Length: 322
Image (cartoon, rainbow, N blue to C red; front, side):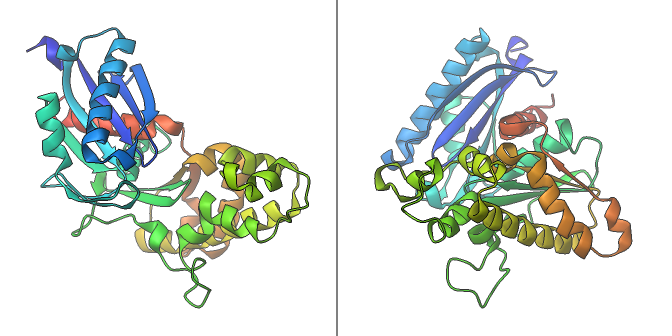
């Protein structure tokens, strides 16, 4: 059994893909596996794919599963933490799924389960841009917008396990449906939806072709960032509007929470880089109260797309006293 305690596994489970890694005591990722989630196949298919991905990650690390002490999972759902139940994962079609118990039986190991942005924020607070900070807000901007709170060094989930749901905050109650919440305005999905009404079908650009091609309609964060850097007027208008709204929301949250740092992650942040951070930082500085909060740092994630994996692995390690 001593041999088993050498490593932990972190699983960052998303609606479309999963990212699995084997992590050692020094928080180094020794082996990884990325694969599609296949949520449309149902719960059993997703669990099977998670188990298979862990085996692949162990192979990549050159170790046997018998050396794994525990498994940590971040899932795209509010999590009833004491019971280990995924309450509602909309993009997987799950309601009240006892995921921790299901996985513990399959792995025959202790399993921890938390919200995907919670584990990413926890990873950043322990190992990344928030390291050494006792109170931190993490905000991930990608397909949607999610948040995680670390208060006085402890991950804060709230009484109803929904703390950090920044994406569902209403920022324009009188706006038309689809333009009212942070997620609807500030996520990549929200920005792309806005662009579809602004970019003409006759425009000859990769962005326009993707926006209006029904067969290839996915517009990723990298394409959005490229169009922004190239000075596309509609993209600049939409991105800057989203950043303005997000900066205002963060200023209000900082006024309430008084964090030492705000860490931004997710696909939009990674693709846009410093330009996105500066766009969000400006309205934050303008609106935050009191003046002491001008010292609150707004920084990009330093763990990138490994934040969720590492945060989940950290929770697994803590659960077995590592």
